[in-house]
Length: 474
Image (tube, rainbow, N blue to C red):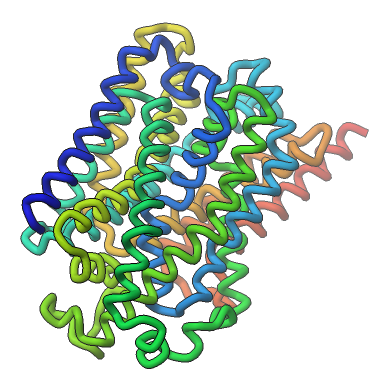
């Protein structure tokens, strides 16, 4: 990269750290640190939600899907709008009043309210593990982008670079820093993709004629995805809107219930169709560039083996002139950092609020929260150095949380007296089953994800124990 592009990128990264420093002096308690003082607007919350949910993993992952299967990859984020709007209608009206009344900071505190303390602790541990993995996936996404752009930088070096910046401003500024940087990052990302990325990429590869010549016919269709694959996306992504700690923190941070609902509807529309088709389109352009031989100088000749998630960074490296490359790099790092910081805050909140149970009003608790955020961030960086595929790591983390936590949430949404024992065993067996199936890498029937079997077992266990509980009360 040219020195001008590097300078633009460095200024951007320092600016993000500056936001963390700005809010560091304004946080007086854990409530400030983890839920932004409960005073955020729908604009900031909505952009932060979509920036967190789509972010770098899905940006790089969507580019990979566009590279592999074309426009049909957009259906993955269609499940995002479904989850966002359903949770706005059914979840927020129940959760928000309770959070205001009891000053909740975390998702497991809701489970403590409807079930008991044991259920909340188990949920906190599951959420903590899941979000450490998810933070790692975002750092890895940034590392892949940086390594592809700067050939002299290894993946490990890039992981350390991304991790230090994200951890830095998150540790310093808490949720306010996260939400405000998310807003800035999302605006930069939209400008970079809409005004710079897609138009220049389209022209560089040769326009519609090049897409027609170099892409398989089914790449331009919305039906190039199997029913089972769509179900796998559906059962993994929709439930996260009901169990995601990052999302509960933003519900709590909203200034009122109407604000939270509006933010969720805004986020859904940005997920699909906006981000879905932008990410897929860039992946398609990357595939055309690869087939045209544009990546030969990087060691990827047409017909050679290439990581689909590398195609998009290589496209960006190849086509953008001085100045614009630095802007676009900042755009994609914006997407990555906007998710990594939120996941890091979620994991830290689970640890300090649900496991350590630090005082919510003690000013010293902020220091403990910052220390927890730092330690968890370092652990996430270490994990990122051991993984290779962004989308897999991200979806595995999703699956583990969803299979353990989704059924107990449905329990308190639809039952008047849900059983704590039913929730506890549903979480342990659901999350444990999914984790075991993922780690053993067994071949599952019908091509279904491990998450499907984890949720199914969790639901069966919950229903059986809940039924026995009701009979014992009669």
